[in-house]
Image 1: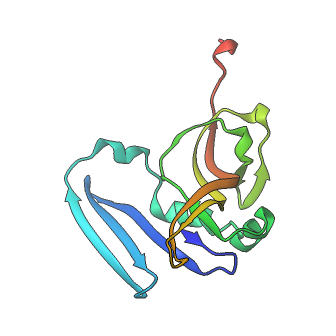
Image 2 (image 1 turned 180 degrees about the horizontal axis):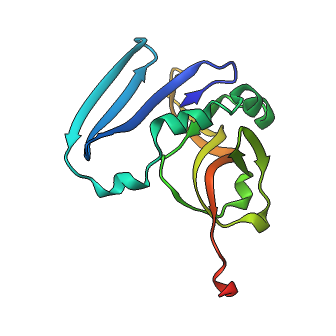
Length: 167
């Protein structure tokens, strides 16, 4: 999801998987803000082994619901655009510079560098800072360059990864 500081959504899409009897339906949902309508596509897969690494959709939204997007946005400062995204995959995480937080038991707590690395699902948030702008002869913007800044990651279902030196 991309959105402005006022909360106006400028881009919104999901990719989700439903499973029943070891068969999978893959959904791609795109919201077109200019038309105020959704486009939904669906494909069916009998098997797909990588699905076992993905977060359950209901569980993902339960954790997302604990985040106060307005507070997160205000804490990042004034920028023209903000982004919230997740790949929905369980993966190793060791980015102390992205201000990791643990979402657990309905609470959000900041993680320290010594608590990393971990295995977890995560939701990333950041602001987009305009780095360049190119205009045509009439002064119309024809190209913009953006860079992510003020990263914060929210991790859930954390499992510590043992340091190899401990073995």
